[in-house]
Each structure stands twice: as C-alpha cells, then as structure tokens.
Length: 309
Image 1 (spheres, rainbow, N blue to C red):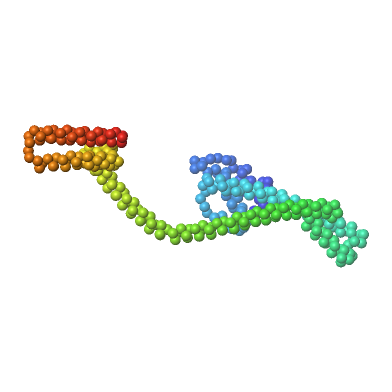
Image 2: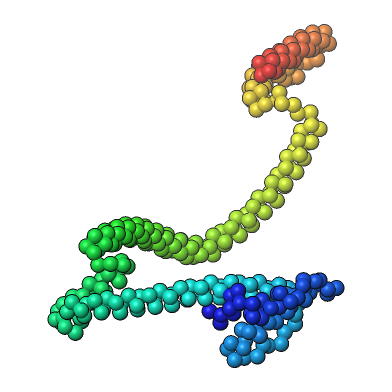
C-alpha cells in the first residue's frame, strides 16, 4: 500500500502539478504535464521509503506506463484513506458504545469482575462463536440462521468433495490404464527391435532374389522372342499343335504299313529278267498305286487339319 497522498487534498504534488500546468505536446512526443506528474509521484513515493529516485530515460512509452500506474495508485490510496477513516470512526463509536455498556453493567452489578469465572468463560465462548459464525448479535435466531448457512455450505463442500473424489478416481483409472498401455507398447517395441535384424536380413535376401528373378525374366523374355522369331521363319502357325502332329505321325505309320507290301513286291520284280512290255505295265501299275497312296495321305492330312480347326 502506498503512502496517502491526501486524495483530493489540493496540496498533493500530483494535484498541484495538474492544476498549475496545462497539457501540451512537444516535437519529441512527450507531454510536459504528464512528465511533471510522473516526476512528482516518483519523488513522493521514494521519499516515503527514504530512497532517491533512480535515473532512467524518460520516453513516451515509459511516461505513459508510469502515468497509468500513478493514476491507479492515487485512486487506490484515496480509496484506502476513505476506508481507513471509516474504520477509525467505527472503532471510536464501538469504543464509546462499549464504555456505555460497561457502565450500565456496572450499575446493575453485572461487571466482569463481579461475574463468576464460568459465566465469563461462557460469555467469551459465546462471543468467539458469534465471531466465528460472522454474526453481529448473540440471538438464538442468528445462531440458527448461521448454523443453517454453515450446514448448507458443508453440504455443498461435501458434494464438491465427492465430485472431486470421483474425478480423481476416474483420473487414477485412466492413469493406470495408460501405464498398462505404455508398458505393453514398450514391450512390443522391444520385441520389434529384437525382430528387426532377422527381418532386415530376410529383406536383403529377398531383394537379392528379386534382382536375380528380374534378370531371369529379361533373359526368358529374350529367349521367348528368339523362339517366336524362329517359329515364324520355319512357318509355324498355332493350328499345328501337338495333337495334330501325333495324329499325322499315326497316319504316316499307317501309310508306311500299307506301302510296305507294295515296296516288297517291287523289290521282287528286280530279280526277274527284263521284259519291256511287262516292265512298262508293272511300272504304270506301281505309279498308279503310288499316286493313290499320295492322294490318300493328302486326304488324311487335310481331314486332320480340318478336325483340329
């Protein structure tokens, strides 16, 4: 609390500076009136504690801040002075009233010195209880009202306490669950850290195998292209399948089986003496049989190709 500056006292340094100087703005932006008020306030405050005002630079910002503090301090000091004067006046009235009550009690023989000790102790207890309950008199109704108000406040405090205990229990449960979850996560992290080196080695192995497979894939694609070009050069078409070739081989064997007796007959004619007419007839007959056999083979091949399509 600052020292009283007199409130509305016209002899106050701040009031004198305010009444004798007018507000004006200089080129530097400092208000001379405010500077004078701030200096006077600082001098009064530091003189009150027996110290000198420290040196500092007066700027527009510091002057504005200090002027605001000085205004608030002056207002609070004035209010405190008013309240203190009111308390002094009330104290004087209470002392006067206490003197009158003491005089009345002495006249009726109820002075404190004449009362028994238990009565004095009870009265002091009653007064302490009234002060504790913040009541102005010792009437039973006042005590009942104060006790009821105290009971209500106690109930409110108990409700708040129960609510706080419930929230604390919930927070404790959440904390326990969080600790358990943290322990589980730490254990999982440790397990993952232990599993990381083997998995990394396996990943490196897979990367190596993948590179090898990519190389093999390129090699197989190149071979496939080469084989496809080769088949195109030899006249391969999709109609020539394995089943067609097997069927054609079977027909070839059948034709060879049919032509074998004819070849044997022709070989037997090689041992006969040459006869031009018979030889020419035999040759013509064999040519006809050979032509029939070729025609039959061609028909079989055509039928096989048609069936495959």
